Length: 546
Image 1 (spheres, rainbow, N blue to C red):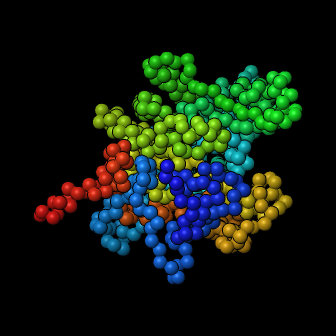
Image 2 (cartoon, rainbow, N blue to C red):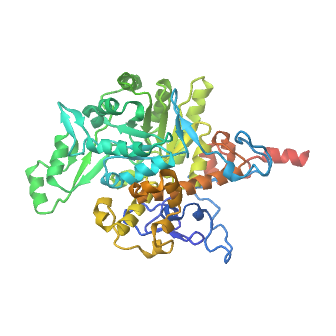
Image 3 (cartoon, rainbow, N blue to C red):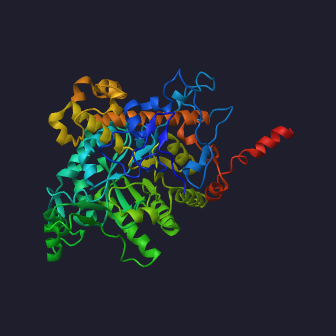
């Protein structure tokens, strides 16, 4: 098995735990003192695109060969001439063909286009407590950066302050808080998406949202996720709360009403309970039934007044992938997110994460194949977002190119959460009276932060840009985690612009599959992307023979 390197001497980054392909540790801790690439880029932003200690060093790539199939085994083409997609008013003159002129804005949707400043979105941040603790940083950061954020499943169901009447939600303070926090800083770019599962549907979450927020919210139906296929889980350590969740209709394991379990909990032999969601569509035995049920669900949402609807599907097999693409197309949905195995989550069974489902590269390669087949048959292909283990700017380029021209966004789950943790920890140091409220873990700045700076304006590369955006008087209300998010997104944006400029593509629509090469034959066979020495070889031979 290939081991991902734990440190990068050129960038000065290091993983606390075992790294995965994304560059994140397999277990990402909210109290982490650093400093993986995502963690450090949340502070220094685009500076982390370059090796450290300039003027005193030279640097070289540590590994350019690839073992096994995966996004790491795709390489990005560069071209010695040309330019495509230059913004209006710019020429092909070298003075205009510079990476800051690369346009990375995108949009998705059918009748209503949702605009985004950067081609990324968050994964679903739902009922896990870590999503609730750091939500303000996540939501404000996404709004300031101009990309969509997803409120995941079960937020209403686990909220002890929410109220149901005859099984339907009539008050949802936590859901309201999350939506309102994003909309407070929303300026026309990005969106807030609310995801629904079986329990959310039963509780009337869709009806509640459309009555209160109208078309300000995108509603998302859910078919599993990349980490597992049995629905969402959280862990609770309070017996009464576990009973509350069971009363709300959730599967709680072990049963908090079982007297034997209660005695075991009393003696601390059992210390926590796992709350599970339900499987969807268990009453359907054939594909026609699935299609009919899905179309009926979409039709009901349209009647409620939803103008923008999306679907999230997980790492199921090829039949389910084809269903998701075709039914999304037939129903005219605004976005389909395809989440490959290998992505992150909050509380999934570990061995299920390790062994269930189709890995991202394989799933996304088939996504392109199936979308192309629809297009060849005259069917409008839905806009696609790809998810499953992404964290860096090269990941964004590769995902956009692999499924070009259908991919509009890259969905990142765990990576954009890291700025939220980091910023909250730093803010808690400077505002100790609010440390508990902020879920800050630190009493003092660790050395890893002090090497960057000692006061907020020095620590965060994005501080002045955010202040310029919201106004100096409003900075007291902006979470430090949102400022950290701005720095991270700026690094991704600049890095993506650089890759695109090297490929001579000056807008996202110009990116194509020919901008990629496979670094080994296994990856070539899976993706259909030519091996490095085969890519463009016919053109090369024509030049030599000419």
